Image 1 (spheres, rainbow, N blue to C red):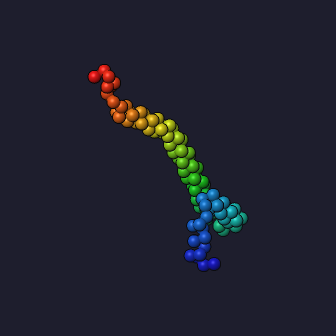
Image 2: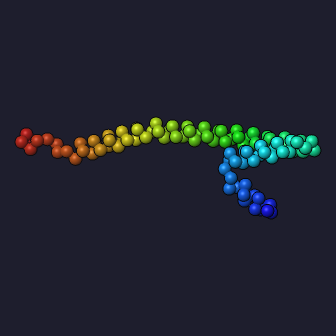
Image 3: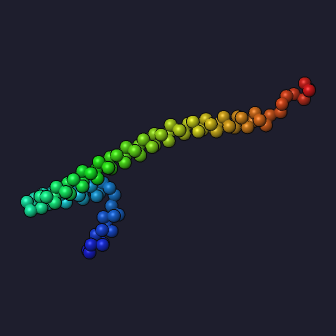
Length: 98
């Protein structure tokens, strides 16, 4: 497998899979004292990616909650608009009174 195929393979993975791949790489590199510095960089990348994943998840949950809070209001607004349209279309009074 050449470098471009490996790069394409990594780009198809989900974020949790990439985090796991980074941790596996870190633990393998940490066994070799010559790669200790590089292993520390890989560890930092894994921690940063995990932190960003958590923030993105929290934002997506907040967005779902915000949309759920707005949905009932928009339905109520649609009902109010329908009631107002009915009221606007109603005749001004009884034909017998005028």
